[in-house]
Every structure is written in C-alpha cells, then in structure tokens.
Length: 402
Image (cartoon, rainbow, N blue to C red; front, side, top):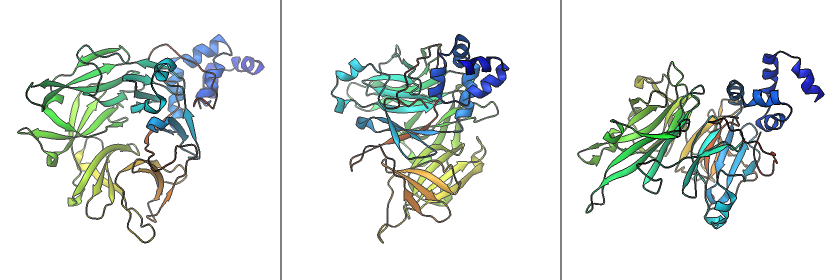
C-alpha cells in the first residue's frame, strides 16, 4: 500500500508507463489496490498501451484437441502450461465424456481467441478469462454445414472483433451438390449479424485456413486472406487460384495474384502471415521442399519474392519428407533461425544458413505417436469487447495469466 501511495504522487503518465510493463497476471491483482488503479487498468487507453508493449513478447497457444489447451512462452520454448479454465461452464463439459470433449481454436487476434466447443462459439481471452458467447444468426444455426472461415479485429482502435461464416444454401432435393453459400459477418461490439452482399457468393473453393495480416494499408487496417479457386462452368478451377482479401474495417474485398513460384509445380499451398508479410507456403513437387513467398509491398502482386526455402534434412542417410509445414516466427535470439511447425506435431528450429534443423522439445505437451497440435501465435493481453473485466486468482496450475 505504501508503494501505491508513493506512486499516487507521480504524474499519471509515469504511473501508466510503469503499470503497462507488468504482466496481465500482476495487473489483475493490482486492480484491487484502489479504485483509481482499477479504473485505470480497466480503461481503454491503458489496454491499448499494454497491448502495444505486449505484442513485443509473443507466446504460442497450442490446441492439443482432446488432450487440452496449452500456452508456451515463445522466448524460452521450454515448458507448456495447460489451460483448464474454459469459456464453457463446467456443468456443460461434465455432461460430456472428457475424452470426447474437444475445444477447437478458429482464429485469434490481440490476445482474443475464437473457440468452438460443445457445438457453440465463444470469443475468449484466456489470460483474463473474459469471454462472450456468439449467438446464432437468424438465418442459420452453427452446425456441421457452417464453416468459420475468418476471425480478427479491424484495428486496435476499432475494438470490434469480427467473425465470418459461410453456410450452405440452395440445396436441391434430388441433388447432393451445394449450389451456393451464404456469407455472414458477426460484430462482437454490437452482437449482431449481417449478410454480406455480392462478391463472396461468386467464388467457390475456399482453401482450408486463413491468414490475418495486420496493418495492411496506410490506415493500419487488418485484413483476412484466403486462397480461392474460382468456379468456371460449375467446375472448381484450381489452376486459376488467387488470394482474396477482406478488410475488416471497410468490409471491402480485393483480389491478388498468386506468386509465379518460378515455374515450379506445387502440390499444395497455404496462406499465412510471417514476419509482418502476407505469405504463401508452397510444397514443390520436384524435391519435396517448401518455399515461403512474401508480398513485400502489400497490395502489389508484382512484389512477390521468395523469402527462403526449407529442405527436409536427411535422417540416418535416408531422405526425409515433410507433409505439412507452417513458418511461425524468427528465433528471438537470431534471425538466421526460423521456428517451424511440421506435420501437425513437431516444432523445429531451422537454420537458414546451414540448412540444418533441430527439434524443439517442449515439456508438458502430450506425447505419443497419435498426438496432433494446432498452434497459434498469441499475446497475453487485457483486451475485451464490452466493459466486463473478469479477474481471477491466477493460480499458475490452472491458468495462464502472464
């Protein structure tokens, strides 16, 4: 208390500068020091200041599906902390057999995650335990025919996470082929849905996954991106793939050409954000390597350039094949190493100079040949949508509030 009284005599700007350097775990505790601190920590301006500083220190949110959810500090990569508090009531979870209850992560931004579980959707901040359930729209109910194809925040100042879903429509009674899809956008700020107009229904064949790229334009807007194959004469033309961008603020769409891949034939592609760039990962058929291409100037398809290639190193004298690869980030200690996620179960550090790799062993994660993970880079933040701030006791054994 004496320290709090001493800080009270400091200028407000100085106090904010000190507090914003603290972890979410500490800030949740310090909200109980006095009413002034509670009001300050809960304020939107402080939330933005803390998020800006927190973005310099990332973590990895790892979904182990039936094995649970975990958090790993990106700087150390040494141990995983399991998250046991979930945005669904314990009563709901206990009604299901534990081994059949899986929480799926559908995207994230600014410390918020969109998660699916027990047939429901929720926007959730695992650091503060704040969450809000997403109510079904009037046109459709979230079920197996509904696909969540995007989630993100327009800007930090916008403070309105949005999610985009598509629902199968216009099914002929005698035809099993889907004739169209309805695209709807949910605003967490207003908790309302709206059906998007022209543009989306004209395209068919959204590839799995999406990339949320931050500060895409001069207005620092964030945008969702997909690789899309158009429909030509009722047939999906995969050789005509392009990238579709959706601005989460203006809700406008743009189309970008894919990289030329230097004439190489690729077996599959994936769009990601890496190093602040919109990137495409492609698997080259000729030698099973993975090329990572980046759009150096956002919106200019002529600026596609190959960032680097990953060649699976031989093992015991035999060739190694990666079936799937996602670049996560550069190593904190050196830009010559890249953290990669391979085949949905392995984390490796790949040296761009020596073309060698080493496995990253993270204690606390489920082991075994059948393990399967889905990682997402994430920050620990105070971000929420409405005025509710749910604090917690911050027991390290039950939650991640750092």
